[in-house]
Amino acid sequence: MAKIKGKVVVDVEHCKGCGVCVASCPVNVLGLSTEVNGKGYPFAMMVEPENCIGCASCAIICPDSCLTVYRQKFE
Picture 1 (tube, one colour):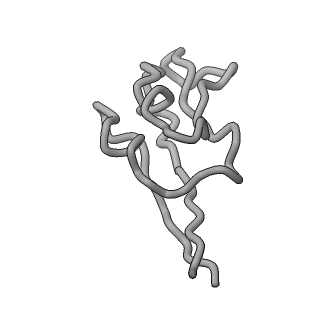
Picture 2: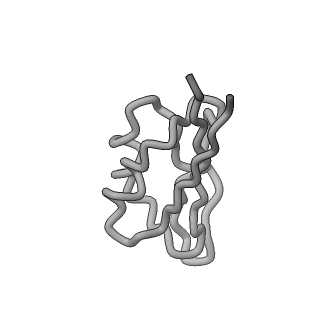
């Protein structure tokens, strides 16, 4: 059976650091950065990228559509 790995790409400048995506991740891949974007907000980032399953829960729940999820299938 093929395994699927995911990758989350964050639009850093539009992220307002609300943390909704962090709370919605079932495998705790996301976290908020200690750095801030141009508007002064901490932004979402992948803190455990190897655990991402590509479910896209974070992208679906993001109120500002700042996240894009890519999936790759491995045999």
